[in-house]
Every structure is written in structure tokens, then in C-alpha cells.
Image (cartoon, rainbow, N blue to C red; front, top):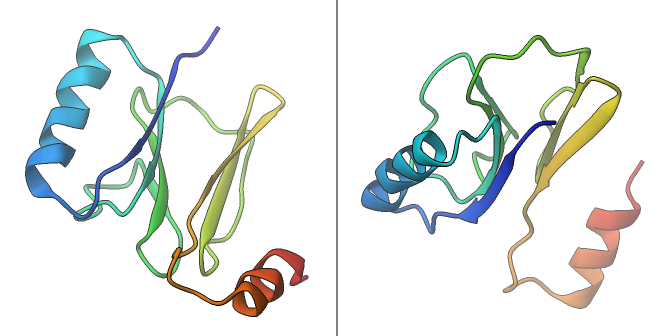
Length: 103
């Protein structure tokens, strides 16, 4: 059974460092993060805007990896698909609808 951590880092370097500490203490396998400060290596699977990412902490072999798109990224591991998504709360309702209904 995998352990997951979901967190919004608000682009804060200190919060991102603490995220790693919590992940280590709690033996987390995957982190689903939003608004990270920066990507930190090949085990980071981020969207094209740098707002949503999945961190494969233990570098577990992935079944599939989706292409990064604006606002979301996904990976599949052991038949489970993980998504990390981000959309700004400052957008209009129409912009949000366009985002969630795009194909």
C-alpha cells in the first residue's frame, strides 16, 4: 500500500524543504503538489506551467506517464492513476469551465 501526501506549497522554498522532511518522516511514496518552488529532478513529473506536480519519492517504477499539460499531470502506478491539478482561483468561471471541459 502506497502512502501519499498532498500539499500546496504557495511557491515557498522553505515549505518545499519541509515537505521533503515530512515525506521522509511519514515514509511517503508519492507527493501531489501545487505551486511548488522549483522542480528538483527526474522524479518530479510537472505540468507545463510549473503549477502542479507529482513527486515519485521512492522512484517507484511507473506503469504509464501522461504528458504534462497546462494545469495538470498524471502518472499511473500499480493500476492506480494519480493526478495533480491546479487552476488559479482568480480566474473567471468561464475560464474554469473551459479548463475542465477541454479534450
